Image (cartoon, rainbow, N blue to C red; front, side, top):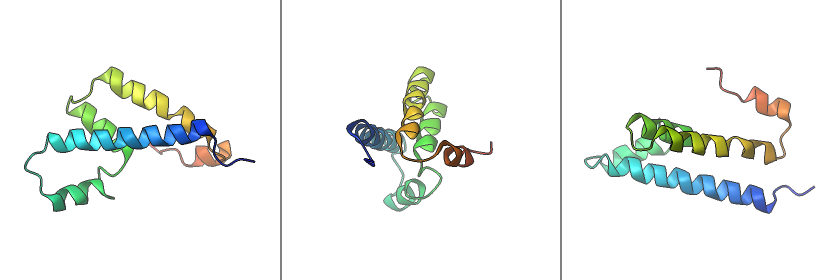
Length: 96
């Protein structure tokens, strides 16, 4: 069994690019932020996840609802491409 295929690799690279672009967009709107604070926020901090960057970008009106929904709709199906049982995926779901 192949662990990854071309579509999965493309999905991962696209998500990584979007994550990076959202971080750059957020940093552009926080001009007085020090490198230390940015590192604390984005590297393991409250803005360290793709979903947190999407949600904050939407909350600050840096992206519109349609863009947010498009990002979220396209990122959900990729989880089913990974070689992980659906039961395991369900156990990783957010409790909120």
